[in-house]
Image 1: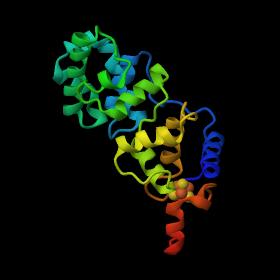
Image 2: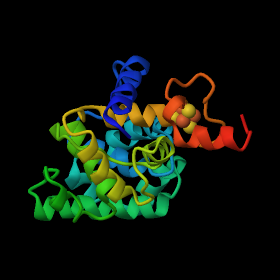
Image 3: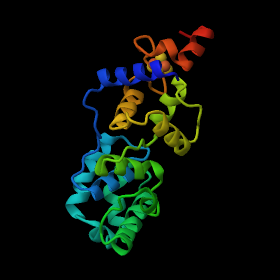
Image 4: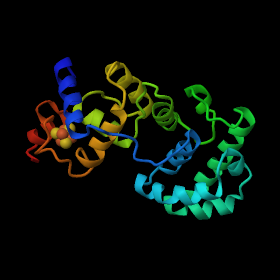
Length: 214
Ligand code: SF4
């Protein structure tokens, strides 16, 4: 993507989502970490319905570290993958208590030592809580980036590093804008290409036109 198209992309996202922010509700770094773990293959809306119940019962890493796994499973069941998620939530809480003095680590290396925390989850925390200029790549960002030809990269972690280089200086809340663009406009099925202001340079759109699918 050339410099001019990169600017068009950034400007367009600014117009569509002038005040984009994390759609998960949280009041502490630890709550965000738990919410992000719960959000795997689940909508933010559903996570936001479950976390108030969860955080009412377990208020800090120590509470979660001592929790009964079956009780946690029962509460988080609506988020799906609840057996694994409950296991990871309890394990990562124990690690935070034991290794990090009950505080969520503020760097990628330490965050990714936590059970079930990969680069994406770690970067969501780093960006939202610690203001780090990082781009956590989820399924939406991966799709948008490849469709537009910003990158040609199917691995989310490598895509994340490439995007951070390409958009250096413009990162702030780019993650949220790209997620929203993928979620509501450049959707996996039936993307809203006709009204999209990026179609002039979108690789995916050009392919659709070439194969007469528009
Ligand atoms: S033209 Fe279509 S595929 Fe390309 S960015 Fe816009 S919505 Fe996505």
